Image 1 (cartoon, rainbow over the protein chains, first blue to last red):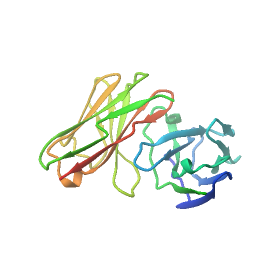
Image 2 (cartoon, helix red, strand yellow):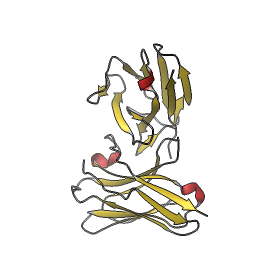
Image 3 (cartoon, one colour):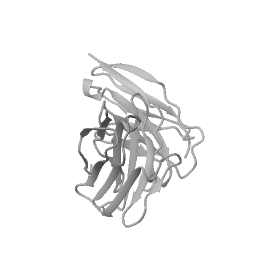
Image 4 (spheres, rainbow over the protein chains, first blue to last red):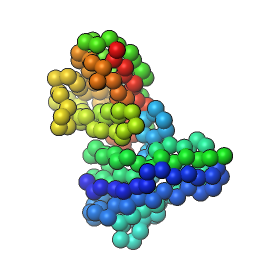
Length: 112
Length: 112
């Protein structure tokens, strides 16, 4: 599975959009981009995933560049409860069959 | 999303005893479940892949005789930490696959 690079930490003001970048320059054609987050002392929570098209759900939007070498997770109106470690994971099999390899993620701190 | 539960949520035991952790998929059947371990301030590390009706597949460096995995039904996988020692103290997280991979809330094990 391809490796991802994320900033170690980010701050965001409550109510503002949080934009979390991820580089995955070695992604292969059949690998998806997955985003999970982990609030302190809890299991990871699925957020969103995509292959090449931009995706949006009730939690977030995922913007994938045309060359698929990077992506951005957007939380449109961050709240204090969005404070967590966000993991960008590239996975074959669409993540539905294989294990997910977690990197260090980005620690997002949403501040009042 | 699908719900995965773990029991217990936390456990404290004496060194040398064995501890069993249960992972259940509550509203779906899962032929494959994964067990992860997370030490403080570190990311999740895959320990083993649990397949219903067959032997688990362990990651390199994980002792299969110490971490016994049983996946006897499509909704239940168990991890038994045998002869636990203080270095086994960690946050153990399971996941199960339906259309996506969903994680349990984790079990915090403290070995005295």
